[in-house]
Length: 423
Image 1 (cartoon, rainbow, N blue to C red):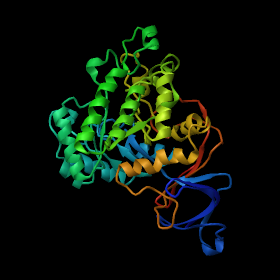
Image 2: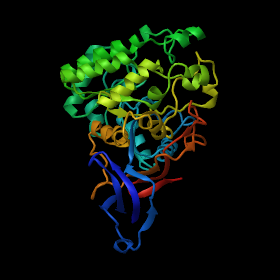
Image 3: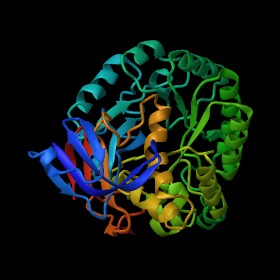
Image 4: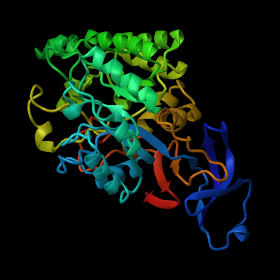
């Protein structure tokens, strides 16, 4: 048993923000209340949470653990450790591994290894075989085997008819579908916004329109099909407005934002080089502000990391050769507090909703809550305590935020009633 005393409970499910004690027994919360006494749980480990926020464990609905295929970058065990250090108790892995998660054997591999991990590891299955965009996977079999949803993340689906069929099948199965939105035919060079900085570097860049045309198409396909569709890692001000319009029209459309897209702008490439190269790219201050407004009004309903580990050798390559992507699990909460809560854009309760209950709802899970009989998945952090982003638990360190001083130091992550991170 674990008795958490004197914490500030912040729970978006019950709209709670106040001082409470929480008693855990095994994988379940058994009591929540004022001034719970050790006498009620004489054998419990007591955590004095004075000055700490006690929130439902965070959920990252978009991570790349590179397993199977690229264990030198990350694997399921190390990725889960990074998640725990960042306050996450549940993650959803993308399907672009090697081999891709397009059959039951590969799905089962991740699920079995995930059982040994520090946090709950869910796996999305590929929409198309080999991520080739030509033929649908056996979505029904993958759903029955436990796939959390479907995505070809990393690659845009260009065949509208095939995508519509996938949406209709996902809707029939009651599972969500998530889409990477970049039309490569409109991109001169990936990873950097086509604008002032790309011009300075003589680097062609990726314009907004490469995202916007895909988002416009897929919002209408979502409206037509009735499927639950997520626009992944949205980066363009126009795309935010397209999602807003599609929601008004009645589409079951959702959108993700990453901390790097609501924190950085294209100038980051000049300072951080390849560690600021990602697909889609960070864009202008106007785009950043549009993403923040989308988070404020519910147009964007999830914050995810798109945790994308690469080796130091890969990121040391020239800008045009280095792979896109950065790690994010260990800095996400701190960046959310720094970029959204401290400037007054969101309350802490709203931030936790975007990082916990909303992603859970999208993936058809009962959102974590600090209530009796709920799963004992919690994060305890000090909102204003500064810490330095270094010595990552991830195998990788490809991050523009390396060395940044951030608020929101995580002190405990508890998953299924076990302390999986203490710092």
